[in-house]
Length: 161
Image (cartoon, rainbow, N blue to C red):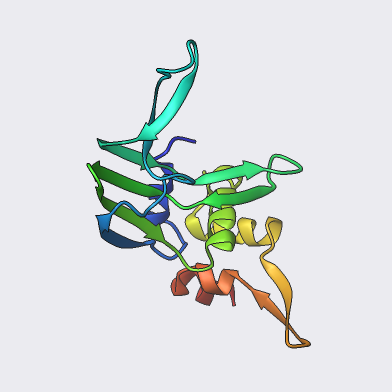
């Protein structure tokens, strides 16, 4: 999956990601570290070192891994676009509700549902095969939550009821 594929979420049954603009001192990681580049080491021949990026762009796609099988998606980091100019940064982050549940279900929808079907049929397949039903405990009170109610657009939820 390339680093811009996540943009398909804007035109999917999932709620649209909200863009967040940051302008200020370097503070947004790409993804784990502040923007940096690799250079040849001046002290150790044949080694590479990381140095802070002075000027440059980073386009970080959705970060995920597969755990136990080819449909067990695990969210790692949200997409971010970053521009660095000396010690300043302009970054656009893509924020979604319940990011772990959102991106893992979206990945299943995108990669494992039948693309010849309608969006509604695909989301039904996704909901049947990739459950987001969790029981959570808060202060000893158990509650069962279907996270699809939090990550899908309302028009797709109405058609599921």
